[in-house]
Image (cartoon, rainbow, N blue to C red):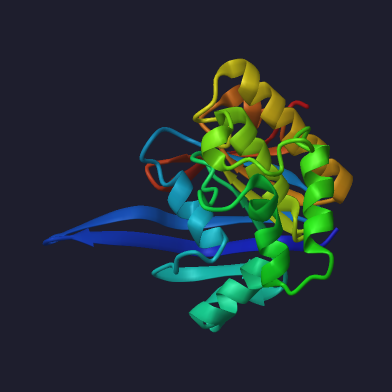
Length: 228
């Protein structure tokens, strides 16, 4: 199966005052289509930075990121945004729902950005899939944390992404609610044939994916097949 994401010799540093902090150094791996893949490591190891680079939200100092056959550094910021809107879904720890929109409208946003017909109809279908068919007219402030993350899941899959990046998707949820969200994430991912890249500190969650990349001190410490 073809690679959907290829990372080659990736490095990233940040400068603060006179100090330069190397966050990632010599990162190399690839992910095939429809694979489930997790990135683990201690706090401050560079996991979220790596996820941002993989998704084209930030640019590396050196090395390349090739997403769905496109080398991201060759694109302008606007071109990267278009690529993300077409091919990429996101789930964040803090949900990132738009507070002035209803649940239904939040899910419809990626579809409307694409100019899709019947955006609201598809958004309603996705809300039903995540068990919130009757909550479409509620605003984020009227939903529990678990419900907000389920809306975020529906939104992430709205544009039929080829790859979905999830950054600590259960980080703000209690254990039982987190388990429900994880089950939904993997069910939707399998049903829609999406590639899933998951950043997590939860090894039990990481073990649900096919491959686990461990980062320590900004470098790859291990890349193993999970015991599914």
